[in-house]
Length: 212
Image (cartoon, rainbow, N blue to C red; front, top):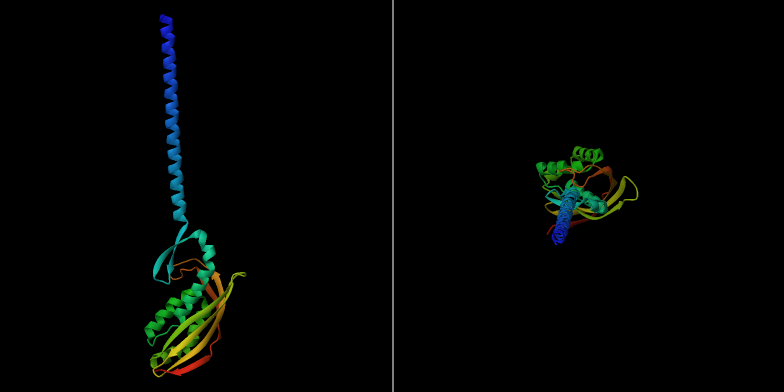
């Protein structure tokens, strides 16, 4: 009888020990799963933060962009780079300081071909004439052709210029061309492009009308 009680106690101890082991392994498994889940979440958070870059939208605000989408957005960014450059370089007010500020902001978008164009235009007295005549120059970029099948990327931009004087408005056709090269992004060059071999292909008067 005593022996039977003894073996029964041993079986109870063995069962209890087995249950404790199962419980311990279960807790250990749950802790492992929780730890792995926490590590995975931390890794995903890190990768997500690293996959985001910040670009300046038209020099005004920071916007977040996914690095995975950057390649897909390059055509859009390229055209916006070209458009923004034209708006800065060809929008002129009858104020020497304002003209210089626009030119200074436009120059980092392009190579020395634009700097030479600016110097040539300045030496011909074009900017001085605008200031003396109290005339403004506005530009509207109608379309941009960008070929991403070759590198550097060739482009051609079709725009309209308006020379607004006191008594009349002159409308000019402006066709420009050049190439885009990839460079590092910066505060002064948020798109990460550089315009090379920029040239004015056509800049003829197409209309002149009296101001009302």
